[in-house]
Length: 130
Image 1 (cartoon, rainbow, N blue to C red):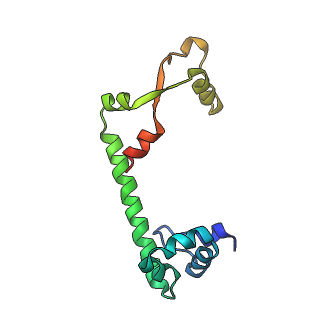
Image 2 (cartoon, rainbow, N blue to C red):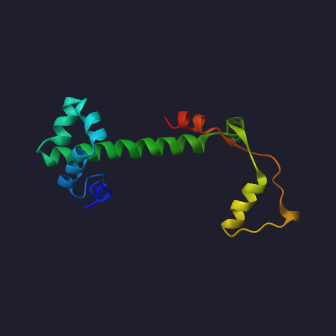
Image 3 (spheres, rainbow, N blue to C red):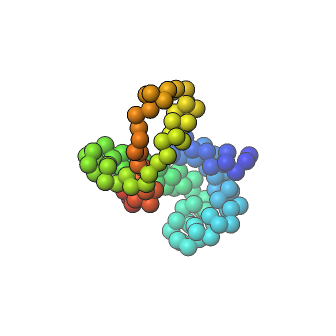
């Protein structure tokens, strides 16, 4: 089983093959070093209790899903003015129209109305997501 298959999850966040998941963690020296820094986490992820491992994975998955939903909700609630204020990086409209053309949307020169396009700074977006 490849390492990516070993980390495969069900829709509820539990490992499809908990023993392969655990073996892949043990085989990855970087992940193993991080896990071993926390004795409680290490006992669950590297121990023999697969139910505890699955529960931990499910709980972490739920927390991450809730975090993603909260972030999406915050982004929906942002006003147009707040969105404009956070968009500080200018974007090349020629490239923008080229990307639109690549997706199948063709705009002739007389229909290219976008002249001044800005996008948010990726670092600001990272701060927003927390």
